[in-house]
Length: 314
Figure 1 (cartoon, rainbow, N blue to C red):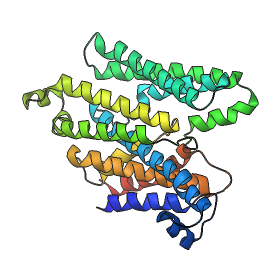
Figure 2: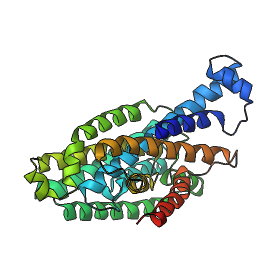
Figure 3: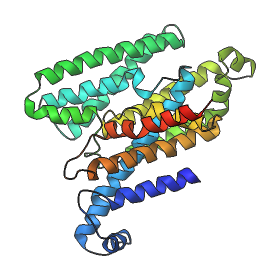
Figure 4: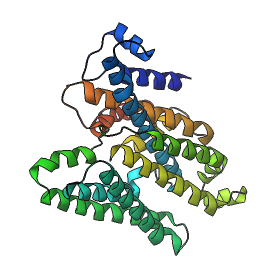
């Protein structure tokens, strides 16, 4: 209930604050569908889609992080360890280098993410079955190769394009005008994850113990891997590379005492979405008309919270 209230409050803040200051009375009239057309357009046409996109991005990354930390049995696992975001970055920045924009950049990012995910699956899963170490090594290798390609693109890019490329790499929600696809992916991914929740609880104990409890380990691992990959691709498509959310949010919830996945997964969705919405609101209103990259602010907000909980926990 507290996180649901926090999520609603964060969305209200996202609609209330921005580069244009709106008096409270005008804002309330715009929320109700009245007032001036300009105010309604700012609230519902500009801020609302971006707020919904920010919530979907945070929720998708937190959900993917929670799944991968169980799947890889590694507390440092996050959605970007798979190299999917690196593949998306190469596609998006390559499209920008050739002067493309808008849908073409999103399409190139989607293609790069899909190629990276297919390469990860092909090299680490298909031939030898599921192997945690092979998945991690393949993901790190793909991410390193993508990082080298990104550095090369930034070196070749004209000075006028570098700023936009860097913003995309650090998370940029300014172009997130159609969040519907991200929300559809979020609902589907959360539904699949909740079905897997009892199996994930058993998988925490190790694959042998999970098999002795009647869990279809290989099938559970494959479905969780595909769900986490799809969630990461959807988040990257909306906002570029927003780091740290998938790493810190599941840890915050586990340190707060939530370990059963039937509770952890929906709470991660609410907490991750709230974190990114608040960070994006701060990014576009703190020094308006300047705008900060949202990925930098998610780290600035999340790191102190994580360190505080680590200091207080046993």
